[in-house]
Image (cartoon, rainbow, N blue to C red; front, side, top):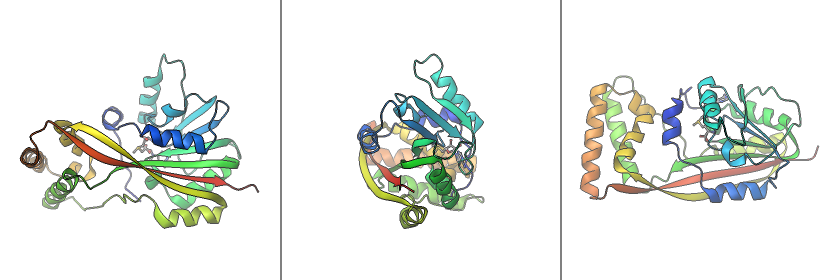
Length: 258
Ligand SMILES: C[S@@+](CC[C@H](N)C(=O)[O-])C[C@H]1O[C@@H](n2cnc3c(N)ncnc32)[C@H](O)[C@@H]1O
């Protein structure tokens, strides 16, 4: 499991891109999402995924960070459709059994204790209810990502605190499916959607600041890292924007009838 990350809500929200609309349409279609659906977004953060489900009658976002929730709340002030928000831990959800039709998790499943979380979701979902996870990762195939990772590692090595820990980009893998089966979920399906993101090179360099390796570097290393990345990018391209290929990994599982 990744370490307990603390997010700066404003920074997070300004840099995190929406999930691909094709992925969202697919999820809604598969889960028979409609106006009467009860949707719970666990680890909703600033509400990026939650926003996609606001046309349902009951939409609840849960997060253990009061700061992320406060930002989500502020964002929805004055809007016609607003989600309910609740400060709680994903491993212990204060809601009755069989309460939800759909539980969604956006880019957060890798932060949970899978066994505990899946047990909670199983309890919370009605029979034939859906658990949907979606996570976005850069493909790693475009020329910039390996360069970015190389530089991060190089400078992290030079920093006394850095211990390279890489996010598992294949998300939760085989263990996830086995846990779902053990708990009585079926119809497991995983679909990957491509999302091409065009970003300004300066924005791309800035996004590296969110990386845990970057945050563990000394200020001097951070400055050198940015200068080297900028200069290498200028060698590769004369454009001011780069296209980054990202993947939205969607996993769906449905609870069986007891
Ligand atoms: C990468 S953000 C994802 C936010 C949002 N779902 C999205 O798609 O942008 C991860 C979120 O998970 C929350 N989180 C991490 N562990 C949690 C837990 N055990 N229970 C509830 N929320 C948790 C963090 O506070 C953070 O808001």
